[in-house]
Length: 396
Ligand code: F3S
Image (cartoon, rainbow, N blue to C red; front, side, top):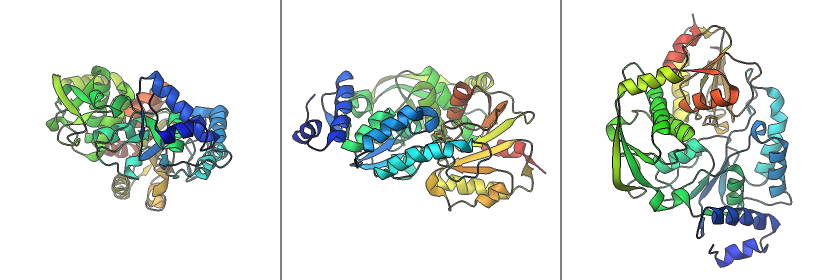
């Protein structure tokens, strides 16, 4: 692999042993995937920081990288951990807080911006054509597809190596040849589904059915920002799509158009998928209602706050959880939610955390949460829009 003079010096330890270690990781992985050089990045988003996922070995690895005063060399944000940093959750295991805080304090000591969210694009909007090294699948899909930036979905250790060196390997979605549309998807929106559920279903469908770079036809795009985010998060989870071209939205020049195939997705296809993956919405037994995968934007959180305030009833007999970026603490009125029996958690989400009790059913508007809740927590999941969820959970 070609390395610049500075990169050679980093590798040789002239910038310290941690930078040299990070460089060795990047070069090794880069050579394995055939990268010819490294590329400088403008923003790193570190993933793989939840204690429940990485445990003591992961904590020790992160600590070893930053011990001795090593610091990130480029703007770096970080994904949610496994603990509610707002401290109010009755749903998630509070015993995880000190374990997660230990990881967080190492990262913060190394200069990482403590945003604890999976939506770094709402913290710092990526520019079209910008190079990034992000490690969260929904964020990667948004960066490439919505903003026209360039990033692979990096594994946690690689994001840390990129943060220390300010570089990643030039391969995958950093190369124009891997950003060429292979399939144009024309979908018909079924009646009766909220836009968030439509986005989730279409994303799950694309994840299962399309192997090359998909392009979603302009008239088939979800109408709302939330719907688009749900679609990209679901297709990234179920099909590992880091780029889904959004016709008329994805900046031109950040993708190529070849001789693509076309597939039609009828409303019947999406209804069939819904019936296959979504359990009936029940409020009997132990049920968790969950909104905020991916974390809500501030305007979505304030919209939800107004919606909740408009209900005269309260949530009874079920748990209702909303997850938000840590940096939104103080911007949302938690009392509005708690007065209606809804818990707001910050800097975490139930997918990367541990429940206090087991649930028979999780109800969510998120196709990504559906995908992982079944796999990780082994629970039944019902897909429903935010409004349907509030209507079902609120008791007069
Ligand atoms: Fe974010 Fe958790 Fe969903 S990290 S994308 S809310 S699984």
